[in-house]
Length: 54
Image: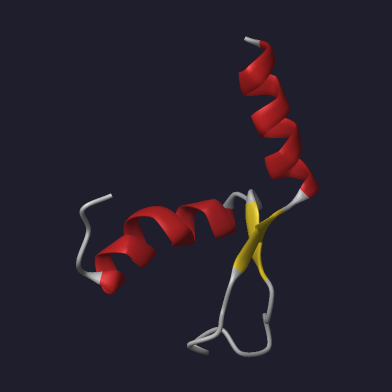
């Protein structure tokens, strides 16, 4: 994506997706862990299917 600043990436992409419940953290009890990952929620999967069908 050509982004080098993690803070801006989190603020611009990750946070809005989390707030919209499109993605969720794999370790919500440790939000700042270096091993933190994200996965699609049911809502996120439905959004992808909707976008594919259009």
